[in-house]
Amino acid sequence: MNIHEYQAKAILRNFGVPVPDGHVVYNSNLARDWARRLGDGPWAVKAQIHAGGRGKGGGVKIAKTADEVRQYAKDMFGMTLITHQTGPEGKTVKRVLVENASNIADEFYISFLVDRATDRVTLMASAEGGMDIEEVAAKTPEKIFFEAVDPVVGLTAFQARKVAFKLGFAMPQVKQAVPLFLNLYKAFVEADCSLLEINPMILTAEGDLLCIDAKLNFDDNALFRHLRIRDLRDYDEEDPMEIEASQYDLSYIALDGNIGCMVNGAGLAMATMDIIKHTGGEPANFLDVGGGATIERVTEAFKIILSDDKVKGILVNIFGGIMKCDVIATGIIEAAKQVGVSIPLVVRLEGTNVEKGRQLLAESGLNIVSAEGMADAAEKIVKAVNG
Image (cartoon, rainbow, N blue to C red; front, side, top):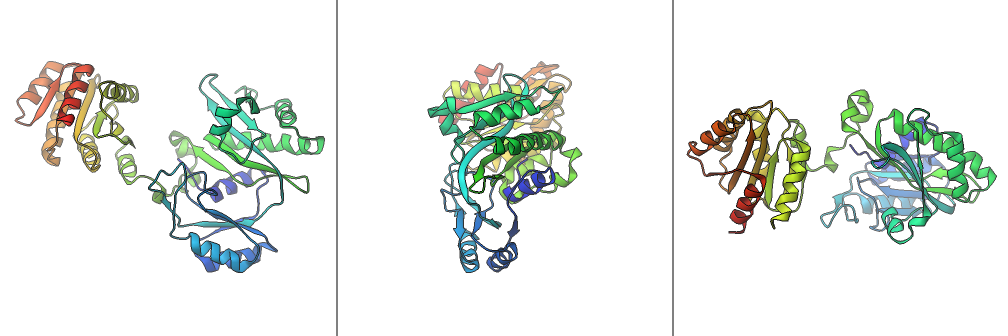
């Protein structure tokens, strides 16, 4: 789950992380009023969407007067902000953050994430703050530093000091950086984050370290422990089909292809998308119905797939383990009848009672093409979609 910048800063502030004073507003007059409450300018006016690169798209402005704050906010509300992370469709701005601007002397990048190579939380840092970290990694990877954290000990003051020195901090800044890094790690662990990113963390002209932008992503499976964080979810920022899928415990991610995929198990789903690509097709989604593929869940899965206008065919790839293939076949048949599937439908079943399941599909009277393996299924659906 993602949250907005202003929400991330509120969480970090509770962990003792230095962030600018600010307030989120929903109309331009409130933007002006809150600027005055925050004190003398200048102020930063920042569009709030779930995407990076807002400054390049016109979503971050520096205002010198309260009236300028009002005008910048007025221009932002309702605008479609397009960045490298939103795609060409962009996102509509409905919230704006007004905060005290900072006198920036230097910028740095700091993040905590789970490194799959080491299976540990890792502190990643770079003196190239304010830039896309992917660009830094591609062009100057030597400027990125990594520090793996022992899960038993946690981030140590020694590790925090080492990173601070690598960033080129003088002793006054090192003394600030150590507790700052430790508090960021504490926030990452205690809030069950999957990503904590500060870009940039700045050194002000006065010599202070300040986190002027923040991005927090959370592990969805841990949200039951964080009800207040869960309530920060902004449904306007999410794909409507993904929201609908979550209501039925379906894992759904929309892609750009034209072959809808319905699979049970994340690993099998990824393998299914791979073999579709290998066969010359393009998957339209990742959709995992899970181990308990009931008629209701399969029906909803069909509805979600068919709501995507790009979908020209559907591949159902189910391994029947605990859930038997004949039960799954019955669910597919009933769901197909309810929804009225009119595009090519290829079904590959494997596992317990597979022959009975295939027989049910064959005798259903529906236009369902049965496949006997993943390669066979991929070839049939790609051929059907391509005519």
